[in-house]
Length: 263
Image (cartoon, rainbow, N blue to C red; front, side, top):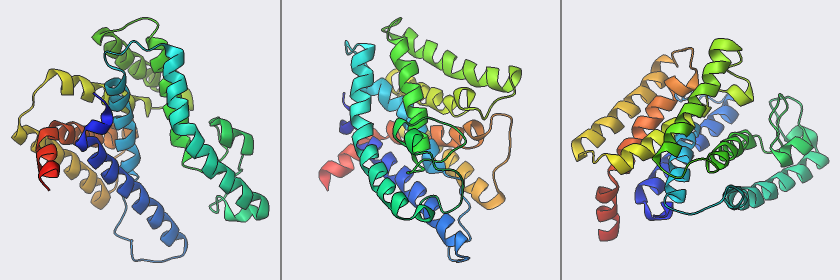
């Protein structure tokens, strides 16, 4: 089943994109001391929903397909890079005209890293590209897993790897915020868990609503009282609420499909 046949996925994309847009608007109006969005203190929950969704969608779109690791990576790069490179080139033109118009909050902008999505302390021409760096990293891990497993064991192994790397970063190296050991990897693992729930469990309507309400409550609680810090960073305080919302919304696929078709 292709992910574009899931109405719930498109609904989640809209919700996540709305959060991302509002977060950027809030950041800009804050820079200009405009108080109209002072109440908006969400720390980018849309990004976390996208990370969890990525784990889910990659599993969904590759299930029961005889796809090679190279073919998988080629397909993913063809999907994300052309549009990203287009906007990066537009940003480069602006940067060459007036560097101050790009990354106005400060920091060193690395042009080569921007195109190659190389992570680091620098900034990209299109700063949101940092999320694609994690996506590519996840795609590489997923592609490598295709060499070894072709069934549900693959998903279990992926969850283990995506949990092991942040665990090493936190418990052994104290490098939880370093790219290759970042706790964000746990959000992809949560996405894979969401997929396993989707294919293995038939959660009823009420339970899905409860999951959505719990996830939403956590998100709004943190907006009002600020994010509570844990050793697992955003993977726990934002990843788990995102996971609950993703599982709940996808579990209501038949409900959304009926409503949309009848509109």
